Structures are given as structure tokens and as C-alpha cells.
Image (tube, rainbow, N blue to C red; front, side, top):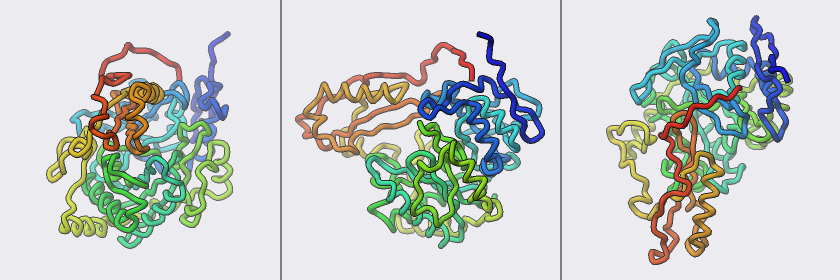
Length: 421
């Protein structure tokens, strides 16, 4: 059989090659790589609103949505002259030239690399030190009902409005919601993160049974407001992004009056273009609504005066002044053991089941939130760690910690392989 010569789509005055157009990217839904490219061409105006002029991390699913992606910060060395790049400096001290997308042709060029969802930084290429977007990421814990996510999202809207800001909601395309806030480019990453932490704590104060700002998973309940998504070098899937779900779900911008009744499964690669054609982009006004962080930073100062200082940062960031101990409470109060470290989530979950089979008495005493499944960032892809909190297991019945099974080492260099996207 001859090699697939690909096809081309004409957008923004250019012909963009789509290689391997018939390659199935969504096995259950049957969508191909060409279907994905045509989707982004159809909603380009909306998709570009979330990424235009921003450096973007390439999250490449070269083998389709049901396989692990790899993260590529650096733009491919060989790229067309019409692809823009900008150099970023990261907290680790490293630098990278990342792709900057400004038009639909550039957008389809990164889709052809295997990018399913779009992951831009919250800054523009002409000012990499001052974010113009505050991102509220609402992440429901295990067993949390979708209605609770919607309720907490509406509280976020109210807190933002009371502090002089306009929120623009969207489904995450997974289990949660996002609220983006356009802000003036006057504040540093640390200040934007601090403002988001103040917002999260205020939402938690108003709905303590439904919302949490606690960083450590074992302390959370309900919907977690992930303030650390605003730390430098963090990215979030943007509006109109297709997510790597079996049904090719879309991160859909919504009007506020849609939030209370929205159903995330209604928005997919197959259905979203018609909504865009009929209703346009619910976030069309976001760029004209840049607001001030003064109100949230004043709230942060009031919280600090009441004894609420900084909260934990992600583990790959340097220790911050005033940050509490970067040690999980379970390490201080409860026995926490690591039972599995898998290159893929299903491998780690299989290891968890083997641990349960070896220790049935202890396993029978575990509660749902005693099993902590963490997506960890490796060199260029995510891996899965599973830990167990033995707080509900009497001390005499607690199994000793064993070597994780499996015991994947994300920092071991694997042989290089090539896969056509």
C-alpha cells in the first residue's frame, strides 16, 4: 500500500497540509485527524480568542486520544517561516522557544502535529511577565455530583463581580468547569496566583460543604479551586478545545444563564460547530472586559491579616517566602504509603488491585478518599502515582510499605522511538 500523501485545508490564505488524515484519533467516536482539523477550521474564530498571541505548549497525541500524549514546549526545529515563536524563561531556569499562534493556518499546523486540546500560557508574546488572564479551575473530587460543580461556579461569578471582575465560564471538557477572567497587564504571576487563592478561600468560606481551597488531596472535599493553575509555567486547556475523551468533548464557553442547567456531554467535536454557527462564541466580549485585581488583592491582604498566609505551591517550584511546610498533612498525622507508580494510569490501577488482593483486611476498611490517584508530570508526558491513606485502618492491621508495584521511574531515559502523527 502506498504511503498516505495527506490532504490540505485552505485557511487564512494558506494551504495547510494534514498528514495521515484518515488516522483515527477518537476510536470510540470514530473521528479522524482530518475531522479534528476540520473542527478547528470551523470554530477558528472562537478557538483563536483563547490562544491568539500567546505562547502555547504542544500537547501531542500522536497515537490518538486514548494513548498518552507527550508535552513539547520547544517549537519543532523545522517549521514553516510563517510560524512565530517566542523565548520563555521557566522557574527551573531553563528556556524554550514556544509556538505562538495568531491565525487559523497556524492553528491547523499545530493540530497536524497531533495537538487535540490547546494549552496556552496566560500571557501574550509581547509581555511575558504580566498575565492578562486569571484562570479559575474548578476540579470536583471523587463522587462529587455535577450539580455541585455548577453551584460552586455560580458562587465564583458572584465573588468576582463583588470585586470588580467579570468571569467567563466554560465547561472544562472533562469533569469540571473553568472561569476565565481578563485582567489588565499590571500584575506579576505571583500576584495573580495570590488573587486567585483569595478568591478560592472566599468561595470556600461561603460554601464550606461544597468548595475547598486545600492543596493536599487528603484534605479536600467537594470542588477544589486550583489556585496554583495561575503559577508561572502552568497552562489550562482553552475555550473550544477538544478534549481527549471517548466522545471528543469540547471545552465550551457558556452564557452565565446556561451554567445552572448545562450538560457537558452535549458539547462535542460533532455538535459544537453547529452551536458556533447558530449562536457564536459566548466569550466574544472577553477581550473588552479587562479588569483590575485591586479588589481581590485587598481581599488577600485582609485574609493575611486574619492569619491566612500563603498556601502550598506545586512541588517543582522553589520554596517561597511565607509558604507553609510543603509536607502532606498525612505525613504529619496519618500513615500514607505509595503502592503504585505506573507509566499509564491503567497500569497503576492494576497495581492497586494487586495490593488490595494482598491485603484484603486493610483494603476493606478504606474509604473512597483514602485512595489518592495523582497525575504526575514527567520529562515530556504524565505518569500515575497511587497512594493510600491508612488512617481508617487500625495501627495493628496496617501493612508495611512495600516497593511500589509497578515502580515506574519517569526520569529513566527510554530508547527514542518515532511515531507518525
